[in-house]
Image 1 (spheres, one colour):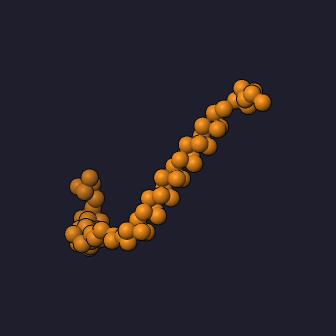
Image 2 (cartoon, rainbow, N blue to C red; image 1 turned 180 degrees about the horizontal axis):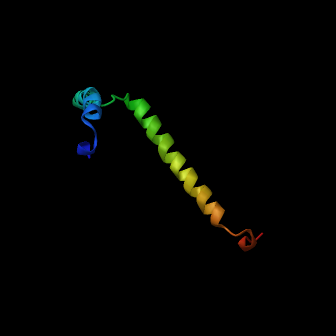
Image 3 (tube, rainbow, N blue to C red; image 1 turned 45 degrees about the vertical axis):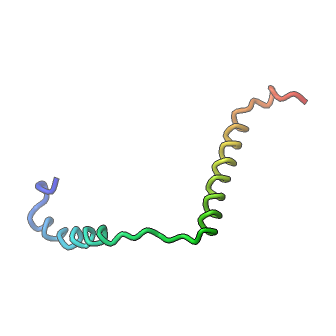
Length: 67
């Protein structure tokens, strides 16, 4: 696809591409505090469980509920 660009456009993109390649070399993983990681995981899992319950409740036909 690069061949579709004009020489001027390729030259203009060169600094951007160079910077992005350098940034990719420096990627660092985030270091989590164990308690913060557990807390975040719990929130994600609980939110998923709540969403599934809401989806299930939305599929229930009110006329099928016995009182």
